[in-house]
Image 1: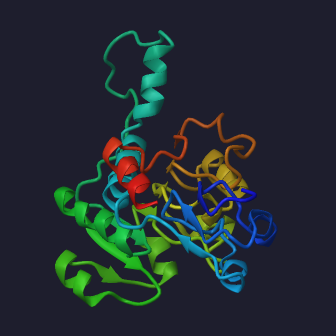
Image 2: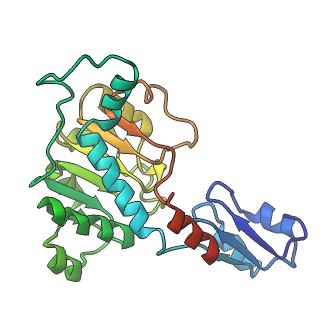
Amino acid sequence: VRGRDAVITLLTDTVDAAVLDAAGPQCRIFANYAVGFNNFDVAAATARKVVMTNTPGVLDDATATHAWALLLATARRISESERYVRAGRWEGWAPMAFIGQDIEHKTLGVAGLGRIGAKFARKAKAFDMKVIYTDAQPNRALEDELGATFVDKETLLRESDFLSLHLPLLPQTQHYLGAREFALMKRTAVLINAARGPLIDERALVTALREKVIWGAGLDVFENEPQLEEGLLALENVVIVPHIASATIETRIAMGNIA
């Protein structure tokens, strides 16, 4: 970055005081090609009068839809059954093969009813689901629109058949879910995370999935990307994709234009 007037960064690029100083005093902006900005040291940039930007809004639909794709794939065991076919093991229809879960009329829990969380929750109407959510504060307008109910975190964990995370990564949300939280969830619960990996204690999640404390998980993000927690890949009751929630042609072009 030395000598540059402007820099476009990815979410995987840490921009701290050392990077800002390396760029030099002529550098005026670091533009993140992402909606998240936990890779930015905003205080250090503010002290040096360097602007930092992100790309909110344009990836909301793609991310919300992707979270639903993970939910459906996990509930209906799509990845597991596809691996079975590709391995040449399928010998014909069987009544108990790859029994999954219905989602219609179930309770959908949404942790974080911001832009993406709200779009995700709206799509639950198509499946006649009951929506409960938790956030920093209730959103009465969305409650009226969606028929959603504001609950505390413990109620969210206890009552959700499907729980999707849409929280920002902050010090207070790191390891939002760990062993204690998994123990509160239904043994039939499905967890979805297309937000940020460190929201989940990944080691505790592996244990919960292995010991069937919860039924399954669909994950787009991970605690220490691209490394995965030991044992995660061996589990059949988890859908794993490589951080692709915003990966549509239209969305990525829009992100680039904003940056």
